[in-house]
Length: 139
Length: 139
Length: 139
Length: 139
Image 1 (cartoon, one colour):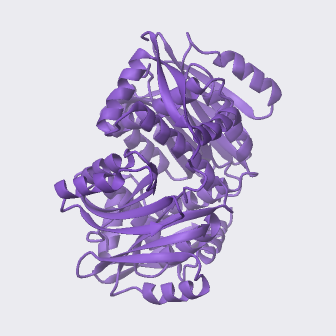
Image 2: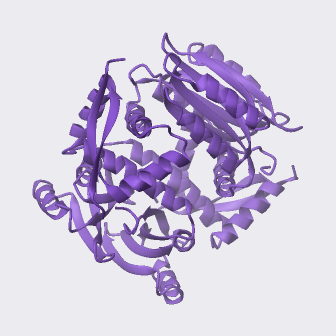
Image 3: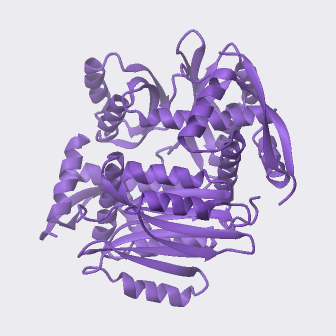
Protein backbone atom coordinates (compact mmCIF):
# COMPACT_ATOMS: atom_id res chain seq x y z
CA UNK A 1 0.00 0.00 0.00
CA UNK A 2 1.12 3.51 -0.78
CA UNK A 3 0.60 6.65 1.24
CA UNK A 4 -2.81 8.16 1.81
CA UNK A 5 -3.73 11.05 -0.47
CA UNK A 6 -6.57 13.51 0.11
CA UNK A 7 -8.40 15.28 -2.71
CA UNK A 8 -11.57 17.32 -3.06
CA UNK A 9 -14.83 16.20 -4.67
CA UNK A 10 -17.61 18.60 -5.58
CA UNK A 11 -21.17 17.39 -5.44
CA UNK A 12 -24.63 18.90 -5.65
CA UNK A 13 -25.98 19.30 -2.08
CA UNK A 14 -29.10 17.19 -2.76
CA UNK A 15 -27.04 14.38 -4.25
CA UNK A 16 -24.72 14.53 -1.23
CA UNK A 17 -27.70 14.29 1.11
CA UNK A 18 -28.95 11.13 -0.61
CA UNK A 19 -25.45 9.69 -0.61
CA UNK A 20 -25.06 10.34 3.13
CA UNK A 21 -28.39 8.61 3.80
CA UNK A 22 -27.20 5.63 1.78
CA UNK A 23 -23.85 5.50 3.64
CA UNK A 24 -25.71 5.46 6.94
CA UNK A 25 -28.11 2.76 5.76
CA UNK A 26 -25.19 0.60 4.60
CA UNK A 27 -23.29 1.28 7.86
CA UNK A 28 -20.31 3.06 6.29
CA UNK A 29 -18.39 5.03 8.89
CA UNK A 30 -17.03 7.63 6.48
CA UNK A 31 -17.81 8.90 2.97
CA UNK A 32 -14.23 8.03 1.99
CA UNK A 33 -14.75 4.35 2.82
CA UNK A 34 -17.97 4.25 0.76
CA UNK A 35 -16.27 5.94 -2.20
CA UNK A 36 -13.28 3.57 -1.94
CA UNK A 37 -15.72 0.63 -2.18
CA UNK A 38 -17.43 2.09 -5.25
CA UNK A 39 -14.05 2.55 -6.93
CA UNK A 40 -12.78 -0.92 -6.01
CA UNK A 41 -16.00 -2.53 -7.31
CA UNK A 42 -15.44 -0.91 -10.68
CA UNK A 43 -11.83 -2.10 -10.75
CA UNK A 44 -12.82 -5.68 -9.86
CA UNK A 45 -15.39 -5.67 -12.67
CA UNK A 46 -12.61 -4.72 -15.06
CA UNK A 47 -10.42 -7.57 -13.74
CA UNK A 48 -13.18 -10.04 -14.72
CA UNK A 49 -13.06 -8.96 -18.34
CA UNK A 50 -9.53 -10.35 -18.66
CA UNK A 51 -10.14 -14.09 -18.97
CA UNK A 52 -6.46 -14.99 -18.53
CA UNK A 53 -6.09 -13.19 -15.23
CA UNK A 54 -5.75 -15.25 -12.06
CA UNK A 55 -8.87 -14.78 -9.94
CA UNK A 56 -10.43 -16.35 -6.88
CA UNK A 57 -13.80 -18.01 -7.38
CA UNK A 58 -16.51 -19.20 -5.01
CA UNK A 59 -18.67 -21.87 -6.61
CA UNK A 60 -21.90 -22.65 -4.76
CA UNK A 61 -23.70 -25.89 -5.67
CA UNK A 62 -27.00 -27.16 -4.24
CA UNK A 63 -27.77 -30.79 -5.04
CA UNK A 64 -29.78 -33.83 -4.04
CA UNK A 65 -27.23 -36.36 -2.80
CA UNK A 66 -29.66 -39.20 -3.55
CA UNK A 67 -29.71 -38.39 -7.25
CA UNK A 68 -26.35 -36.91 -8.00
CA UNK A 69 -23.04 -38.25 -9.21
CA UNK A 70 -21.45 -34.97 -8.15
CA UNK A 71 -19.06 -36.59 -5.68
CA UNK A 72 -17.64 -38.79 -8.42
CA UNK A 73 -17.40 -35.93 -10.94
CA UNK A 74 -15.68 -33.69 -8.39
CA UNK A 75 -13.10 -36.40 -7.76
CA UNK A 76 -12.43 -36.71 -11.49
CA UNK A 77 -12.13 -32.95 -11.96
CA UNK A 78 -9.95 -32.52 -8.91
CA UNK A 79 -7.54 -35.14 -10.17
CA UNK A 80 -7.07 -33.33 -13.45
CA UNK A 81 -7.07 -29.83 -11.89
CA UNK A 82 -5.23 -30.37 -8.62
CA UNK A 83 -4.04 -26.79 -8.60
CA UNK A 84 -7.38 -25.04 -9.06
CA UNK A 85 -9.65 -26.30 -6.26
CA UNK A 86 -8.16 -24.73 -3.13
CA UNK A 87 -10.64 -26.14 -0.64
CA UNK A 88 -14.30 -27.01 -0.29
CA UNK A 89 -16.98 -26.79 2.36
CA UNK A 90 -20.04 -29.00 2.77
CA UNK A 91 -23.35 -28.07 4.43
CA UNK A 92 -26.26 -30.49 5.00
CA UNK A 93 -29.42 -28.55 4.16
CA UNK A 94 -32.06 -31.19 4.88
CA UNK A 95 -32.65 -34.90 4.41
CA UNK A 96 -32.25 -34.61 0.64
CA UNK A 97 -30.32 -31.45 -0.12
CA UNK A 98 -26.66 -30.63 0.30
CA UNK A 99 -24.67 -27.49 -0.43
CA UNK A 100 -21.07 -27.64 -1.56
CA UNK A 101 -18.98 -24.48 -1.71
CA UNK A 102 -15.71 -24.74 -3.65
CA UNK A 103 -12.97 -22.15 -3.40
CA UNK A 104 -11.17 -21.94 -6.76
CA UNK A 105 -8.01 -20.12 -7.83
CA UNK A 106 -6.83 -19.77 -11.42
CA UNK A 107 -7.38 -18.02 -14.76
CA UNK A 108 -10.98 -16.79 -15.02
CA UNK A 109 -11.66 -18.94 -18.08
CA UNK A 110 -10.53 -22.14 -16.31
CA UNK A 111 -12.73 -21.34 -13.32
CA UNK A 112 -15.69 -20.82 -15.66
CA UNK A 113 -15.02 -24.12 -17.47
CA UNK A 114 -14.87 -26.13 -14.23
CA UNK A 115 -17.99 -24.39 -12.90
CA UNK A 116 -19.90 -25.25 -16.08
CA UNK A 117 -18.90 -28.92 -15.88
CA UNK A 118 -19.98 -29.22 -12.24
CA UNK A 119 -23.24 -27.29 -12.71
CA UNK A 120 -24.10 -29.59 -15.64
CA UNK A 121 -23.82 -32.68 -13.42
CA UNK A 122 -27.01 -34.68 -12.96
CA UNK A 123 -28.74 -33.94 -9.64
CA UNK A 124 -27.23 -30.46 -9.24
CA UNK A 125 -30.26 -28.19 -8.75
CA UNK A 126 -28.50 -24.88 -8.63
CA UNK A 127 -25.01 -23.63 -9.23
CA UNK A 128 -23.43 -20.18 -9.28
CA UNK A 129 -19.86 -19.04 -9.72
CA UNK A 130 -18.95 -15.79 -8.02
CA UNK A 131 -15.60 -14.35 -9.14
CA UNK A 132 -13.51 -12.41 -6.64
CA UNK A 133 -10.23 -10.57 -6.78
CA UNK A 134 -7.05 -12.02 -5.25
CA UNK A 135 -6.62 -8.56 -3.77
CA UNK A 136 -3.04 -8.36 -5.03
CA UNK A 137 -3.51 -5.48 -7.45
CA UNK A 138 -6.21 -3.78 -5.45
CA UNK A 139 -4.75 -1.44 -2.83
CA UNK B 1 -30.63 21.26 -7.96
CA UNK B 2 -29.05 22.54 -4.80
CA UNK B 3 -25.75 24.34 -4.40
CA UNK B 4 -22.44 22.63 -5.05
CA UNK B 5 -20.61 21.35 -1.97
CA UNK B 6 -16.95 20.35 -1.82
CA UNK B 7 -15.60 17.74 0.60
CA UNK B 8 -12.38 15.78 1.00
CA UNK B 9 -11.86 12.10 0.22
CA UNK B 10 -8.79 10.18 1.38
CA UNK B 11 -7.50 7.36 -0.76
CA UNK B 12 -4.44 5.15 -0.92
CA UNK B 13 -2.09 6.54 -3.62
CA UNK B 14 -2.00 3.27 -5.60
CA UNK B 15 -5.79 3.04 -5.61
CA UNK B 16 -5.99 6.65 -6.76
CA UNK B 17 -3.55 5.92 -9.58
CA UNK B 18 -5.72 3.04 -10.82
CA UNK B 19 -8.83 5.18 -10.50
CA UNK B 20 -7.27 7.99 -12.53
CA UNK B 21 -6.30 5.52 -15.26
CA UNK B 22 -9.91 4.29 -15.33
CA UNK B 23 -11.30 7.84 -15.50
CA UNK B 24 -9.06 8.56 -18.46
CA UNK B 25 -10.02 5.31 -20.19
CA UNK B 26 -13.72 6.09 -19.73
CA UNK B 27 -13.18 9.70 -20.85
CA UNK B 28 -14.23 11.37 -17.59
CA UNK B 29 -12.99 14.96 -17.46
CA UNK B 30 -12.77 15.15 -13.67
CA UNK B 31 -12.63 12.74 -10.74
CA UNK B 32 -15.73 14.46 -9.34
CA UNK B 33 -17.79 13.57 -12.42
CA UNK B 34 -16.70 9.92 -12.21
CA UNK B 35 -17.55 9.77 -8.49
CA UNK B 36 -20.93 11.42 -9.11
CA UNK B 37 -21.71 8.68 -11.66
CA UNK B 38 -20.73 5.92 -9.23
CA UNK B 39 -23.01 7.44 -6.58
CA UNK B 40 -25.94 7.96 -8.97
CA UNK B 41 -25.66 4.37 -10.22
CA UNK B 42 -26.02 3.11 -6.67
CA UNK B 43 -29.05 5.34 -6.11
CA UNK B 44 -30.72 4.16 -9.32
CA UNK B 45 -30.20 0.53 -8.29
CA UNK B 46 -32.02 1.32 -5.06
CA UNK B 47 -34.89 2.91 -7.00
CA UNK B 48 -35.40 -0.39 -8.87
CA UNK B 49 -36.00 -2.28 -5.63
CA UNK B 50 -39.21 -0.32 -5.06
CA UNK B 51 -41.65 -2.01 -7.44
CA UNK B 52 -44.33 0.68 -7.03
CA UNK B 53 -42.07 3.53 -8.02
CA UNK B 54 -42.63 5.18 -11.40
CA UNK B 55 -39.70 4.40 -13.67
CA UNK B 56 -38.80 4.75 -17.32
CA UNK B 57 -38.19 1.52 -19.21
CA UNK B 58 -36.59 0.71 -22.54
CA UNK B 59 -37.79 -2.61 -23.91
CA UNK B 60 -35.76 -4.00 -26.81
CA UNK B 61 -37.37 -6.78 -28.88
CA UNK B 62 -35.82 -8.65 -31.82
CA UNK B 63 -38.27 -10.73 -33.82
CA UNK B 64 -38.90 -12.42 -37.13
CA UNK B 65 -41.79 -10.53 -38.69
CA UNK B 66 -42.68 -13.56 -40.83
CA UNK B 67 -43.38 -15.69 -37.80
CA UNK B 68 -44.57 -13.31 -35.15
CA UNK B 69 -47.94 -12.06 -34.01
CA UNK B 70 -46.15 -9.32 -32.09
CA UNK B 71 -47.85 -6.49 -33.99
CA UNK B 72 -51.25 -7.81 -32.98
CA UNK B 73 -50.23 -8.40 -29.35
CA UNK B 74 -48.75 -4.92 -29.10
CA UNK B 75 -52.00 -3.44 -30.33
CA UNK B 76 -53.95 -5.37 -27.71
CA UNK B 77 -51.57 -4.38 -24.91
CA UNK B 78 -51.46 -0.76 -25.99
CA UNK B 79 -55.22 -0.55 -25.92
CA UNK B 80 -55.38 -1.76 -22.34
CA UNK B 81 -52.29 0.20 -21.22
CA UNK B 82 -52.58 3.42 -23.15
CA UNK B 83 -50.75 5.31 -20.47
CA UNK B 84 -47.65 3.10 -20.23
CA UNK B 85 -46.23 2.87 -23.76
CA UNK B 86 -44.85 6.37 -24.41
CA UNK B 87 -43.52 5.74 -27.87
CA UNK B 88 -41.85 3.09 -29.98
CA UNK B 89 -39.15 2.86 -32.60
CA UNK B 90 -38.78 0.30 -35.37
CA UNK B 91 -35.56 -0.80 -37.09
CA UNK B 92 -35.36 -3.24 -40.03
CA UNK B 93 -32.37 -5.50 -39.35
CA UNK B 94 -32.47 -7.72 -42.43
CA UNK B 95 -34.97 -9.47 -44.66
CA UNK B 96 -36.33 -11.49 -41.73
CA UNK B 97 -35.46 -9.68 -38.53
CA UNK B 98 -36.90 -6.53 -37.00
CA UNK B 99 -36.08 -4.64 -33.83
CA UNK B 100 -38.73 -2.79 -31.88
CA UNK B 101 -37.74 -0.49 -29.02
CA UNK B 102 -40.58 0.58 -26.73
CA UNK B 103 -40.24 3.46 -24.27
CA UNK B 104 -42.36 2.71 -21.20
CA UNK B 105 -43.29 4.83 -18.20
CA UNK B 106 -45.02 3.52 -15.08
CA UNK B 107 -44.63 1.53 -11.86
CA UNK B 108 -41.69 -0.88 -12.16
CA UNK B 109 -43.93 -3.92 -11.66
CA UNK B 110 -46.28 -2.90 -14.49
CA UNK B 111 -43.32 -2.39 -16.83
CA UNK B 112 -42.03 -5.86 -15.93
CA UNK B 113 -45.45 -7.44 -16.53
CA UNK B 114 -45.85 -5.86 -19.98
CA UNK B 115 -42.26 -6.79 -20.91
CA UNK B 116 -42.88 -10.41 -19.93
CA UNK B 117 -46.04 -10.60 -22.04
CA UNK B 118 -44.32 -9.18 -25.11
CA UNK B 119 -41.16 -11.28 -24.73
CA UNK B 120 -43.35 -14.40 -24.45
CA UNK B 121 -44.95 -13.67 -27.83
CA UNK B 122 -44.34 -16.27 -30.55
CA UNK B 123 -41.60 -15.21 -32.98
CA UNK B 124 -39.84 -12.88 -30.53
CA UNK B 125 -36.24 -14.12 -30.50
CA UNK B 126 -34.84 -11.85 -27.86
CA UNK B 127 -36.23 -9.33 -25.42
CA UNK B 128 -34.70 -7.27 -22.66
CA UNK B 129 -36.16 -4.61 -20.38
CA UNK B 130 -33.73 -1.97 -19.18
CA UNK B 131 -35.10 0.16 -16.32
CA UNK B 132 -34.02 3.78 -16.07
CA UNK B 133 -34.70 6.59 -13.65
CA UNK B 134 -37.10 9.44 -14.51
CA UNK B 135 -34.32 11.65 -13.15
CA UNK B 136 -36.73 13.51 -10.89
CA UNK B 137 -35.23 12.45 -7.55
CA UNK B 138 -31.69 12.26 -8.83
CA UNK B 139 -29.93 15.60 -8.62
CA UNK C 1 -35.11 -21.29 -40.77
CA UNK C 2 -34.92 -25.03 -40.92
CA UNK C 3 -37.70 -27.55 -40.47
CA UNK C 4 -39.38 -28.10 -37.12
CA UNK C 5 -38.11 -31.06 -35.10
CA UNK C 6 -39.88 -32.64 -32.14
CA UNK C 7 -38.06 -34.41 -29.33
CA UNK C 8 -38.95 -35.70 -25.87
CA UNK C 9 -37.94 -34.14 -22.54
CA UNK C 10 -38.28 -35.95 -19.23
CA UNK C 11 -38.98 -33.94 -16.13
CA UNK C 12 -39.96 -34.59 -12.53
CA UNK C 13 -43.74 -34.01 -12.20
CA UNK C 14 -43.33 -31.40 -9.42
CA UNK C 15 -40.79 -29.46 -11.47
CA UNK C 16 -43.12 -29.60 -14.47
CA UNK C 17 -45.99 -28.26 -12.35
CA UNK C 18 -43.91 -25.27 -11.26
CA UNK C 19 -42.77 -24.70 -14.83
CA UNK C 20 -46.35 -24.75 -16.12
CA UNK C 21 -47.36 -22.20 -13.46
CA UNK C 22 -44.49 -19.98 -14.56
CA UNK C 23 -45.43 -20.31 -18.26
CA UNK C 24 -48.97 -19.25 -17.42
CA UNK C 25 -47.79 -16.32 -15.31
CA UNK C 26 -45.51 -15.13 -18.12
CA UNK C 27 -48.29 -15.67 -20.71
CA UNK C 28 -46.52 -18.34 -22.77
CA UNK C 29 -49.00 -20.20 -24.96
CA UNK C 30 -47.01 -23.44 -25.12
CA UNK C 31 -44.18 -25.10 -23.17
CA UNK C 32 -42.21 -25.27 -26.42
CA UNK C 33 -42.27 -21.49 -26.82
CA UNK C 34 -41.05 -21.00 -23.23
CA UNK C 35 -38.24 -23.54 -23.72
CA UNK C 36 -37.24 -21.92 -27.01
CA UNK C 37 -36.90 -18.59 -25.18
CA UNK C 38 -34.74 -20.14 -22.45
CA UNK C 39 -32.47 -21.65 -25.09
CA UNK C 40 -32.24 -18.46 -27.15
CA UNK C 41 -31.40 -16.41 -24.04
CA UNK C 42 -28.47 -18.69 -23.34
CA UNK C 43 -27.27 -18.38 -26.92
CA UNK C 44 -27.52 -14.57 -26.86
CA UNK C 45 -25.48 -14.49 -23.63
CA UNK C 46 -22.79 -16.46 -25.42
CA UNK C 47 -22.86 -14.00 -28.34
CA UNK C 48 -22.02 -11.17 -25.89
CA UNK C 49 -18.83 -12.87 -24.81
CA UNK C 50 -17.36 -12.42 -28.29
CA UNK C 51 -16.36 -8.75 -28.30
CA UNK C 52 -15.70 -8.66 -32.03
CA UNK C 53 -19.12 -9.89 -33.01
CA UNK C 54 -21.56 -7.43 -34.57
CA UNK C 55 -24.42 -6.78 -32.15
CA UNK C 56 -27.31 -4.36 -31.82
CA UNK C 57 -27.24 -2.10 -28.79
CA UNK C 58 -29.84 0.10 -27.12
CA UNK C 59 -28.23 2.87 -25.10
CA UNK C 60 -30.56 4.69 -22.71
CA UNK C 61 -29.37 8.05 -21.35
CA UNK C 62 -31.20 10.28 -18.84
CA UNK C 63 -29.77 13.79 -18.55
CA UNK C 64 -30.48 17.32 -17.46
CA UNK C 65 -30.44 19.38 -20.64
CA UNK C 66 -29.64 22.54 -18.65
CA UNK C 67 -26.34 21.12 -17.43
CA UNK C 68 -25.21 18.77 -20.13
CA UNK C 69 -22.96 19.07 -23.14
CA UNK C 70 -24.35 15.76 -24.35
CA UNK C 71 -25.72 17.19 -27.59
CA UNK C 72 -22.29 18.48 -28.55
CA UNK C 73 -20.54 15.23 -27.56
CA UNK C 74 -23.05 13.16 -29.51
CA UNK C 75 -22.41 15.25 -32.59
CA UNK C 76 -18.65 14.71 -32.23
CA UNK C 77 -19.02 10.96 -31.70
CA UNK C 78 -21.49 10.60 -34.56
CA UNK C 79 -19.11 12.30 -36.94
CA UNK C 80 -16.32 9.88 -36.15
CA UNK C 81 -18.62 6.82 -35.95
CA UNK C 82 -21.11 7.49 -38.69
CA UNK C 83 -21.68 3.81 -39.20
CA UNK C 84 -22.47 2.83 -35.60
CA UNK C 85 -25.35 5.07 -34.50
CA UNK C 86 -28.34 3.79 -36.50
CA UNK C 87 -30.93 6.16 -35.12
CA UNK C 88 -31.93 7.92 -31.92
CA UNK C 89 -35.12 8.80 -30.07
CA UNK C 90 -35.73 11.69 -27.72
CA UNK C 91 -38.30 11.86 -24.90
CA UNK C 92 -38.96 14.94 -22.74
CA UNK C 93 -39.37 13.67 -19.16
CA UNK C 94 -40.04 16.94 -17.34
CA UNK C 95 -38.88 20.53 -17.32
CA UNK C 96 -35.28 19.48 -16.57
CA UNK C 97 -34.86 15.88 -17.62
CA UNK C 98 -34.58 14.31 -21.05
CA UNK C 99 -34.17 10.75 -22.19
CA UNK C 100 -32.20 9.84 -25.29
CA UNK C 101 -32.31 6.31 -26.65
CA UNK C 102 -29.64 5.47 -29.25
CA UNK C 103 -29.82 2.38 -31.44
CA UNK C 104 -26.29 1.17 -32.16
CA UNK C 105 -24.96 -1.49 -34.50
CA UNK C 106 -21.38 -2.75 -34.54
CA UNK C 107 -18.76 -4.90 -32.78
CA UNK C 108 -19.66 -5.29 -29.08
CA UNK C 109 -16.45 -3.61 -27.97
CA UNK C 110 -17.08 -0.51 -30.09
CA UNK C 111 -20.62 -0.23 -28.70
CA UNK C 112 -19.24 -0.45 -25.17
CA UNK C 113 -16.61 2.21 -25.88
CA UNK C 114 -19.14 4.68 -27.28
CA UNK C 115 -21.55 3.98 -24.42
CA UNK C 116 -18.80 4.68 -21.87
CA UNK C 117 -17.90 7.98 -23.51
CA UNK C 118 -21.51 9.18 -23.58
CA UNK C 119 -22.30 8.01 -20.03
CA UNK C 120 -19.19 9.86 -18.80
CA UNK C 121 -20.49 13.15 -20.24
CA UNK C 122 -21.22 15.90 -17.70
CA UNK C 123 -24.93 16.18 -16.89
CA UNK C 124 -25.78 12.59 -17.81
CA UNK C 125 -27.49 11.21 -14.69
CA UNK C 126 -27.96 7.66 -15.79
CA UNK C 127 -26.86 5.54 -18.70
CA UNK C 128 -27.24 1.89 -19.55
CA UNK C 129 -26.25 -0.12 -22.62
CA UNK C 130 -28.39 -3.13 -23.37
CA UNK C 131 -26.88 -5.48 -25.96
CA UNK C 132 -29.18 -7.39 -28.28
CA UNK C 133 -28.71 -9.92 -31.02
CA UNK C 134 -29.05 -9.01 -34.69
CA UNK C 135 -31.12 -12.16 -34.89
CA UNK C 136 -29.15 -13.41 -37.88
CA UNK C 137 -27.65 -16.49 -36.25
CA UNK C 138 -30.58 -17.14 -33.97
CA UNK C 139 -33.24 -19.22 -35.69
CA UNK D 1 -39.78 -35.84 -5.79
CA UNK D 2 -42.66 -36.90 -7.95
CA UNK D 3 -42.66 -39.31 -10.85
CA UNK D 4 -40.87 -38.58 -14.11
CA UNK D 5 -43.05 -37.23 -16.92
CA UNK D 6 -42.11 -37.10 -20.59
CA UNK D 7 -43.44 -34.50 -23.01
CA UNK D 8 -42.62 -33.30 -26.51
CA UNK D 9 -40.91 -30.05 -27.45
CA UNK D 10 -40.83 -28.72 -31.01
CA UNK D 11 -37.86 -26.69 -32.12
CA UNK D 12 -36.48 -25.32 -35.37
CA UNK D 13 -33.72 -27.66 -36.59
CA UNK D 14 -31.08 -24.90 -36.69
CA UNK D 15 -31.89 -23.80 -33.16
CA UNK D 16 -31.69 -27.42 -32.01
CA UNK D 17 -28.28 -27.78 -33.65
CA UNK D 18 -26.95 -24.74 -31.79
CA UNK D 19 -28.48 -26.01 -28.54
CA UNK D 20 -26.85 -29.42 -28.96
CA UNK D 21 -23.47 -27.77 -29.54
CA UNK D 22 -23.95 -25.76 -26.35
CA UNK D 23 -24.94 -28.86 -24.35
CA UNK D 24 -21.79 -30.60 -25.52
CA UNK D 25 -19.62 -27.60 -24.71
CA UNK D 26 -21.11 -27.39 -21.21
CA UNK D 27 -20.76 -31.18 -20.75
CA UNK D 28 -24.47 -31.95 -20.39
CA UNK D 29 -25.15 -35.65 -20.94
CA UNK D 30 -28.71 -35.21 -22.17
CA UNK D 31 -30.89 -32.40 -23.54
CA UNK D 32 -33.35 -33.08 -20.71
CA UNK D 33 -30.72 -32.30 -18.06
CA UNK D 34 -29.81 -29.03 -19.79
CA UNK D 35 -33.47 -28.02 -20.06
CA UNK D 36 -34.07 -28.92 -16.40
CA UNK D 37 -31.21 -26.58 -15.45
CA UNK D 38 -32.64 -23.73 -17.54
CA UNK D 39 -36.03 -24.20 -15.86
CA UNK D 40 -34.58 -24.43 -12.34
CA UNK D 41 -32.50 -21.27 -12.89
CA UNK D 42 -35.64 -19.35 -13.78
CA UNK D 43 -37.40 -20.68 -10.68
CA UNK D 44 -34.47 -19.74 -8.40
CA UNK D 45 -34.49 -16.21 -9.85
CA UNK D 46 -38.15 -15.96 -8.90
CA UNK D 47 -37.36 -17.16 -5.35
CA UNK D 48 -34.96 -14.22 -4.95
CA UNK D 49 -37.68 -11.70 -5.64
CA UNK D 50 -39.48 -12.71 -2.43
CA UNK D 51 -37.40 -10.95 0.22
CA UNK D 52 -39.05 -12.81 3.11
CA UNK D 53 -38.24 -16.24 1.78
CA UNK D 54 -35.57 -18.29 3.54
CA UNK D 55 -32.55 -18.62 1.26
CA UNK D 56 -28.97 -19.82 1.51
CA UNK D 57 -26.29 -17.21 0.88
CA UNK D 58 -22.58 -17.41 0.16
CA UNK D 59 -20.82 -14.18 1.10
CA UNK D 60 -17.26 -13.84 -0.24
CA UNK D 61 -15.06 -11.17 1.36
CA UNK D 62 -11.47 -10.28 0.38
CA UNK D 63 -9.66 -8.08 2.90
CA UNK D 64 -6.30 -6.91 4.14
CA UNK D 65 -5.97 -8.32 7.64
CA UNK D 66 -3.45 -5.60 8.53
CA UNK D 67 -5.99 -2.85 7.96
CA UNK D 68 -9.33 -4.38 8.77
CA UNK D 69 -11.50 -4.57 11.84
CA UNK D 70 -13.51 -7.27 10.09
CA UNK D 71 -12.81 -9.90 12.75
CA UNK D 72 -14.26 -7.67 15.43
CA UNK D 73 -17.28 -6.69 13.34
CA UNK D 74 -18.00 -10.33 12.47
CA UNK D 75 -17.95 -11.21 16.16
CA UNK D 76 -20.43 -8.44 16.91
CA UNK D 77 -22.74 -9.43 14.05
CA UNK D 78 -22.54 -13.11 14.90
CA UNK D 79 -23.56 -12.40 18.48
CA UNK D 80 -26.68 -10.57 17.39
CA UNK D 81 -27.46 -12.98 14.52
CA UNK D 82 -26.46 -16.35 15.94
CA UNK D 83 -28.98 -18.12 13.75
CA UNK D 84 -27.96 -16.69 10.38
CA UNK D 85 -24.24 -17.42 9.98
CA UNK D 86 -24.11 -21.19 9.49
CA UNK D 87 -20.37 -21.53 9.10
CA UNK D 88 -17.37 -19.74 7.65
CA UNK D 89 -14.20 -20.62 5.81
CA UNK D 90 -10.92 -18.75 5.79
CA UNK D 91 -8.27 -18.78 3.03
CA UNK D 92 -4.88 -17.01 3.25
CA UNK D 93 -4.28 -15.43 -0.16
CA UNK D 94 -0.87 -13.85 0.39
CA UNK D 95 1.05 -11.97 3.07
CA UNK D 96 -1.58 -9.21 3.17
CA UNK D 97 -4.80 -10.57 1.77
CA UNK D 98 -7.34 -12.97 3.27
CA UNK D 99 -10.57 -14.40 1.91
CA UNK D 100 -13.47 -15.20 4.20
CA UNK D 101 -16.47 -17.13 2.87
CA UNK D 102 -19.56 -17.08 5.08
CA UNK D 103 -22.45 -19.47 4.59
CA UNK D 104 -25.68 -17.72 5.58
CA UNK D 105 -29.24 -19.00 5.99
CA UNK D 106 -32.28 -16.80 6.52
CA UNK D 107 -34.76 -14.41 4.88
CA UNK D 108 -33.21 -12.83 1.77
CA UNK D 109 -33.53 -9.33 3.19
CA UNK D 110 -31.63 -10.26 6.40
CA UNK D 111 -28.85 -11.85 4.35
CA UNK D 112 -28.58 -8.69 2.26
CA UNK D 113 -28.46 -6.47 5.37
CA UNK D 114 -25.67 -8.50 7.00
CA UNK D 115 -23.74 -8.61 3.73
CA UNK D 116 -23.95 -4.84 3.38
CA UNK D 117 -22.67 -4.28 6.93
CA UNK D 118 -19.70 -6.60 6.44
CA UNK D 119 -18.82 -5.26 2.97
CA UNK D 120 -18.88 -1.71 4.42
CA UNK D 121 -16.23 -2.64 7.01
CA UNK D 122 -12.91 -0.78 6.74
CA UNK D 123 -10.23 -2.87 5.03
CA UNK D 124 -12.66 -5.07 3.08
CA UNK D 125 -11.54 -4.71 -0.55
CA UNK D 126 -14.23 -6.75 -2.22
CA UNK D 127 -17.44 -8.39 -1.14
CA UNK D 128 -20.17 -10.25 -3.00
CA UNK D 129 -23.28 -12.02 -1.81
CA UNK D 130 -24.45 -14.92 -3.96
CA UNK D 131 -27.97 -16.12 -3.11
CA UNK D 132 -28.80 -19.80 -3.52
CA UNK D 133 -31.88 -21.90 -3.05
CA UNK D 134 -32.30 -24.22 -0.03
CA UNK D 135 -33.42 -26.75 -2.64
CA UNK D 136 -36.57 -27.55 -0.65
CA UNK D 137 -39.10 -26.31 -3.19
CA UNK D 138 -37.03 -27.18 -6.21
CA UNK D 139 -37.60 -30.77 -7.33
